[in-house]
Length: 285
Image (cartoon, rainbow, N blue to C red; front, side, top):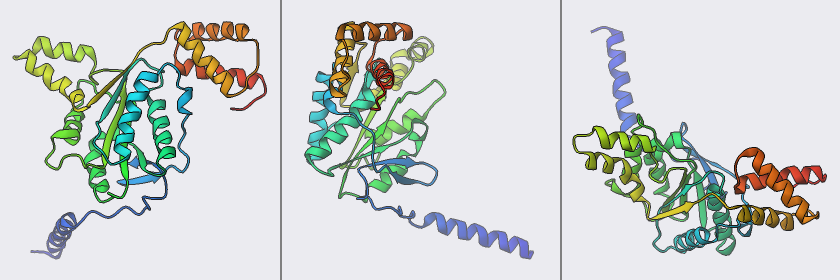
């Protein structure tokens, strides 16, 4: 055996020993912030000192879903049982804004009780490592948040998420919840589900495998396209909040023209109109 062969053997032994050793601990103070982003490459959390959120009362038209999600989140922050939540439906209707606003609202009621950890959709496969990290931090309660979650036909990541949410051996830690937003109720495109139904030997079982992921969420909160009246009420709430004094009738007409140019009425479109209006008034909001 040559010296090079011996060196390669020693290297493999060293690598094996390293894999058997404990994972390195995160080099952060978990009390340093109320929000973090998950870095899947370094397997660490990046503090967000001032997470962006809007006042909960500005989310007009979302009162029913807001009350439900707030009650669930408050239960969790107080140490009681609570459910994972899927916020699904029309784009631009405030799904992600509601999650961030409720996080901020709960932390005002119960200071520093709740940590929001954002995980990107492409990093879902690393959630087991994130949960492993959080298991050691029972001093705080965490909501893992994934915005715009969905899966395509060739993506098997959803199976990992199913196991993490409920079906894994370790289970989800009691001090961790998972909130997600999606445009799709079952997180899968409709044509993908229909294709499974038409080509599988046992269609019902094939479809069940695809849509059972959404069953892991105890709360399904639907967001629907807003009416013209609701859209104008959203605009009016921003005008009052930011003191943008102007003729209401004229502003309504401008807001409707703005929405028509974009082919959509939503909370996001209303906010974009207000941003444009404030800029034209020489204000920054």
